[in-house]
Image (cartoon, rainbow, N blue to C red; front, side, top):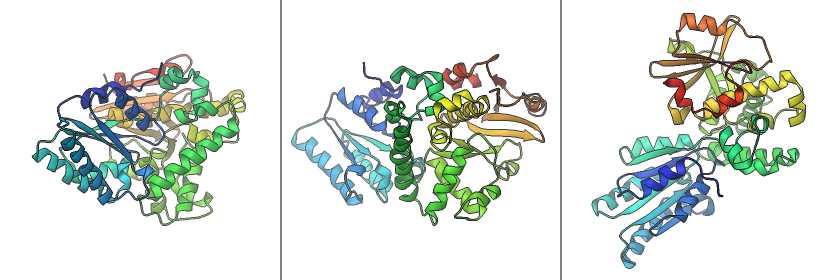
Length: 396
């Protein structure tokens, strides 16, 4: 049976409602946006067209207007009451949000039942266009990197495979040939995302520096490293503010982020040493010298993989559950991950076997009493249990 993501039912139901808001589906590249909308369209009860800027090198504002007008002509000539238009990778069109706003408002004035779905992989460009031009006209459906239950149910993976190979469905068939898997992740996923989302849509003065930052940060996923020290390790050196801006871009592309230290004072958060964290553990594994079996056999190395996998799960789900992710440290006391949503704080310590438990969790509870304090480890809440749980339960 064909595997369907949880968002399938939600999208199908919304498309069958009377036209009210356009639906915007956002998520990192290669998480199944196009496949998902294709599954929904197979069951669509009314006519539709799907167009992609990736398939058209001449895609432009005028091209989008022509596509939209063609939908109106089809509805008129075929006497269609409802029709669906899906535009994939819409953010690649200059001034796309103003065009969409103009055409959507015209259909609204003329009471035309042209349903619209927009797909985009650049969270930064999509959300900027939505907030600047399309306020009140859309609903956002967020897709994330695949979770452990999704990779298990779709591909039969075990926990160890997920921790090492991460959550890219398109790469799942290559894991028996690890060299091929690494090439695919680097060439088809990482380089495509950097080239099409980061470099194409953002002014990057030193693209090689951004790539070096990503590779170094991914290999240190789950660890703290000051940007000043990072700068010393990069061949193409830039100032700290440039590195910080590039790290923000990589985060918006769903690749790599720098977690800030949790503090009540926001200024202290922004000035803290970042803790690098990939959004998908595959991004860490491709830059490591250890193979899958070598990593499994080294407890210290595998402990780092576990910590990074927990962090990747928390970071990749943050938009879906509307929380922020931090870490905490005071002298030698530390807590691996701190989640914050409204007035609730969740403290999560990962006991992976790589290091002994410190007094960080106890100390944090004394200073900042959390809503929940959780230890993920073999004797408490296991890694498999944590990676399988609905994170909404943490805030209840």
